[in-house]
Image (cartoon, rainbow, N blue to C red; front, side):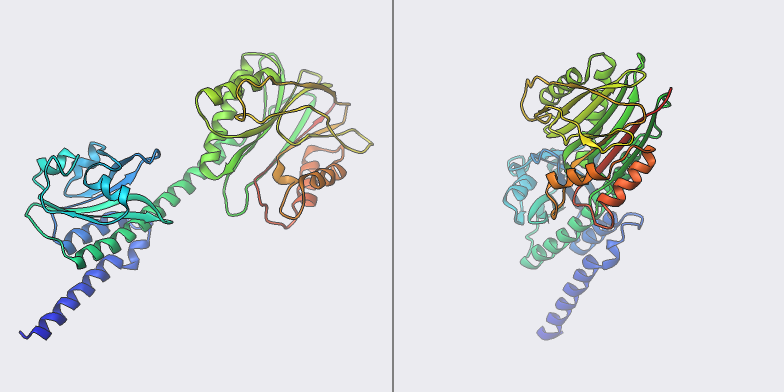
Length: 406
């Protein structure tokens, strides 16, 4: 065979290897396991004994074994490698490929590698949006010098692995968000004689859920709690924090005390356990027949009170700092009378604020459209007039309550 023919065969092999790894069918997250299929192809193309994917944990300090072909015990044992240490840790820290021909206790921190007699390794970082999210490495039992072409090909493979991991995380997060959203929204309003309720929730554009919520519950002593809150940020993390805060507030409400005291306890827990999430919240609490509400405001937009046959007004409440902003804040509350037939409307700032409208103007527009009517009519009118066909810039939560005859 001539040198030219050998060169053509080598080029054909490289092309076939590249096609095997860049096959677009591997993008299908609905297939049985696209990542496992890709690792099998990488193992075959590189003719190696092991392929491993490690991903950064939430702290960003450790790589955790996520998937493997040939070193499955790494995954089963939950192997963790400190970023900056050992073979994979150096790749993650430096953000570039690395090869070693002699695996020893001095060159790696993972004992599985030298216990399984892996001799030579080649690794590349997994990168998403210019940030390292993990490492892909291959290893073989025989001593081997990896070529520049192989290093380039593994870098391409790492791009594919990062893409599949990202797609899987997105699919998992979407499913988790849908489930979490259903679990956190009130299934039904409490059956309370003397009160009617309605609510709305609309996530920001292109999101299924965020950190906004409303809640309504009664306590054994018949106290009625109306709550609306807004955790800074969007997406799954904000929703998870929102769920924790919502449960915390409910638990402290059961211990007794007014809204100011319960907000203080909730704020203390947020600081002590490092929830690290700025949260605005407004709580309105009343006892039957619900003619007076005690209202506490933690950095939240003022609620709207619409008496029957009259214009609505913004309830004047001393606004304390948001939860999570400063430790040890003393919370305050005010008492507000609610006439028979009147509506109390709580909401989050996504309803009254957008890129085109400042919050003060939005609040005035809201006040002008709220009327004392059935809460469902109030919510429907508010969403029609305040949102209409615009795509919300922020999450929106709305809670309406009307006092009726017991």
